[in-house]
Image 1 (tube, rainbow, N blue to C red):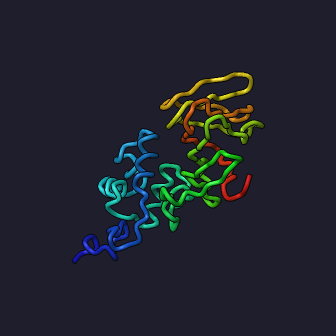
Image 2: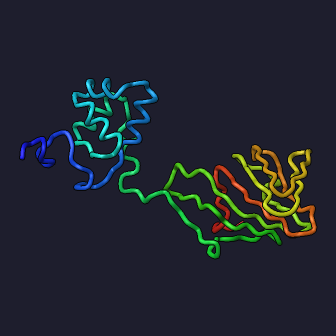
Amino acid sequence: MTSSQNPERNPEAVPVKQRLQIRFGEKLRTVRESKGYTLKTVAKAAGVSESLVSQIERNHVSPAIDTLLALAEVLDINLEFLFEEYRRERPVHIIRAGERPAIQEDDVVYEQLARPEESDRANLLESYVIRIPAGSRTHRGSYGHLGREFGVISRGSARLKYESNEYILHEGDSVSFPAGCPHILENIGTVPLEAIWVVTPPQRFVGRGL
């Protein structure tokens, strides 16, 4: 077996199955294409074969460190960007239907759908199912806060009071707005109002108290 056939002696690459899988391919390809570089151009500048660059981009092989550094230099990529997912818990978080953290504000209930992680700087939103009894309303937004909100009415009818304006929302309607102005969501129907609400940046009031 020659050195080109033996992964342990090949300075360019080692098959992914024999090593810890760190997937650089998608990032390298995305940056290369955004810069308008061809595989041939990048390979020549990095001093490796065009075939190798193609295999790395498709995650068929994991590059040796010197090859990775050469590609990063050619593409002007920050190494922190390449390694940001290394040994990080995968960003898939599941909250089961019967296990949603919830908090009650008078008779309004907020059930958490997406929990912001303190350690994840990219996780800049949180979302809830808001349940409002007939004739009641929210109170939290009455003072306004930094960020933006987006909501979908999944059941019932609502009145959104935003500054001095009012907007009527029915089942299936959606709304978004800067959260810095005072805003209140009011149930104007005869059945409990349900809405799916997204807030960014997260307010983190579930688990912290009102």
